[in-house]
Image (cartoon, rainbow, N blue to C red):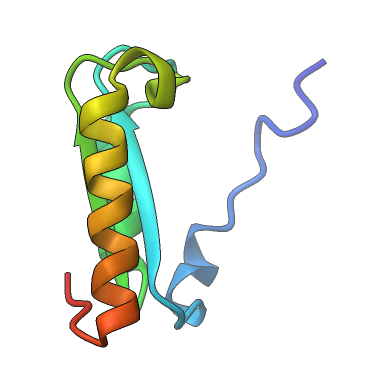
Length: 83
C-alpha cells in the first residue's frame, strides 16, 4: 500500500518557526539530501549528517548522532541557535 506515496508537505515547511533539527544518514532509505533540503526550507532549521548511520542512526552512528543532537539542544537553550 503506497498511501503516502504522493503526500508532500514541503510547501508548509517555512511555516514551522521553532528551531528544528533534521538528521540525514548515508545508509538511510530516505535520501539525506532531502533532509538537508527540508532544513533549508525551515525558518529555523538545521541539518545534521550521520556518515555511518542508517535509519536508526542513533544506534549505528551514535557518537556523531548525539553530538549533533546535544549541540542543537545547547544552542537552542543558550539562545545562540543559528543555521
